[in-house]
Amino acid sequence: MSQTTTQKILITGGAGFIGSNLCEYFVSKGYRVACLDNFATGHRHNIEALLGNPLFELIEGDIRNTEDCQKAVQGADYVLHQAALGSVPRSINDPVTSNEVNISGFLNMLVAARDAKVKRFIYAASSSTYGDSESLPKIEEKIGKPLSPYAITKYVNELYAEIFSKTYGIETIGLRYFNVYGRKQDPNGAYAAVIPKFVMQLMKHESPVINGDGSYSRDFTYIDNVIHMNEQAMLSQNPEAVNTVYNTAFGERTSLNELVVKLKQYLSEYDASIADVEIVYGPNRTGDVAHSLASVDKARRLLAYDPQFSFAQGLNEAVSWYWENLK
Image 1: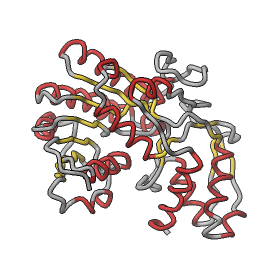
Image 2: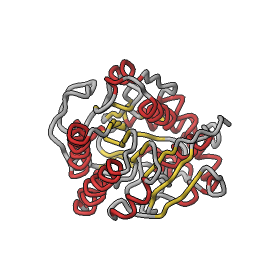
Image 3: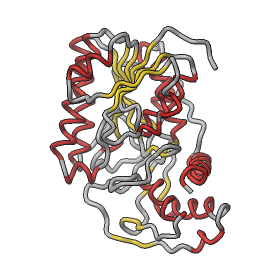
């Protein structure tokens, strides 16, 4: 374990998939970490191992409540804001709640961070901000029109962060996450992400349903690359690196058909019969972007971002974790 530092990080949504991995990592590095979560989509079991650690503090609260936000930022040097209601379909089914959490909650956190004079506010932005822009790879400065309420909320986050930087002088960095996957990602529920959902179905010998013909592609990004990106964004001393947004991805794209082939290949090493599970194709989903591929040149240049896990390497790690923990 690294030497304990006096620096404190607030991680909102710290019991969620990405947040809990960040909590674990930064505690292991010797930081004091406060986790703010209301357990709407996060899980206590994700942070169970940290609960007795003197460097870790759990604050049960909601970013929609200004007092919870103010309490959580006390003494924090950095905020890693992960709390949000993800999922395009969820935002289409219930745009009001997505807006309340992702926009009003985000604004509450920005105000609290400004008032507490935190050094830097790093937040989860989204590749959904690229909307109907068809250019590939996606470059930070060129976006299209949003295709879902969720995409609107994440774009508004970027606009608010930029205004707060200019108006109040708070340092902000937005990380446009591209289809993050890996250990602790929840396979259950109506809005489960595609990789854990497919893994779970294949382990049960159930046929995964691909929306569309399987040609849609994504820049699937392993969780360890995302942790690395957050750390680089937090610690960068480059004055040019702040008050902007970065793609957080590996920089390769994989079609859903290719994804399923790889999943079956890795899972059949544990259970050979998984190789024979059939795949079912359904209709395309409303609001889905056809192709997603990030340029990570800006992050490499300004943040010294150097992702270590390719899609195949990350998927192999993720499958191994799911097999051990969910079987």
